[in-house]
Length: 348
Ligand SMILES: Nc1ncnc2c1ncn2[C@@H]1O[C@H](COP(=O)(O)OP(=O)(O)OP(=O)(O)O)[C@@H](O)[C@H]1O
Ligand SMILES: [Mg+2]
Image (cartoon, rainbow, N blue to C red; front, side, top):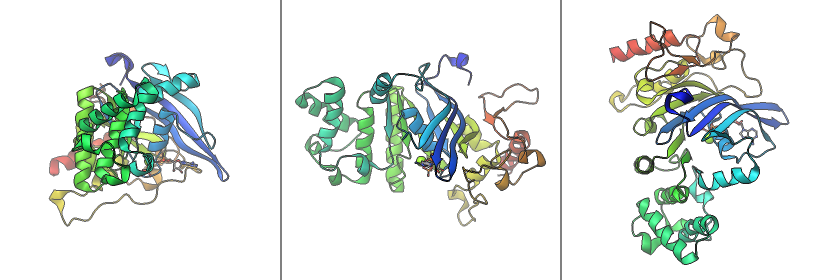
């Protein structure tokens, strides 16, 4: 999306580069990531393990361990201002109150020896200078907002006294406490069983639409994002390989990697069919393949893919005009790939 289409995006990550300096060499974990999120929008970030989803999020949040990590290029514009060049104190303030993050593992993010009410209240005591008593009332309010039953009675309970799903709701409550404008949820439901996953995801979507927050939802599960995301960014080897409206990407992916990902979701209407898995392994970040990093695994690989790294091409119609909603693919053969997807979609 061009910034002047809809004004300044809430978050605009441009050509972000993050390296890890390890004993074996430099691992390029994030290798030119560009994505944006508007207020009230949900962007799902997808990709196999190790593709750089979390490292990108940690760079946005400003919680990378430096060293071994180093941001070596790019910009992270939050409401138009670059977080990477901002003073430490200002950045800390934004991190505390405007951008919040939800992690996968609630149990290790919560303090086991403090009641959940105390921990929720702490947000208001520290950031808003509230009294303990008022903060406790706020904690109950937050627990109600994330639909924890009997919140008043349970505010003094400890993390281990809650189920996994309820603990994840507490993490969401914690993230919501200071009314952030952006929430980054990194695999927020991965540790939960399937029915609870859906409930937590629905809750997150509901809260997000109520408050017009931007939401970045990181997952490697394409199945969970269909209902909640507006747009999808697919990552491979530290780069975005496809970006599109969620319905468009499901209807017809324009990158061979996305095609592989989509083909690997188990479908209820295709019981018994063999699951397609993408052949081969994700690349070694110390020695990225030449050209397109996906080329060693790509079923449609051509000569040029071995030598030329594809930029993110804008998908256009036959007249060369960008399609609406806009979409991009980092494949030299996006057109052929899209046509193939459309043909197969028609056959289904
Ligand atoms: N502390 C570290 N030292 C060296 N390399 C690291 C470190 N942390 C992450 N990396 C590298 O960065 C790459 C990207 O990691 P990241 O955690 O962003 O992957 P991810 O897409 O979130 O995967 P997952 O789906 O498993 O969470 C990994 O391949 C890893 O090798
Ligand atoms: Mg991760």
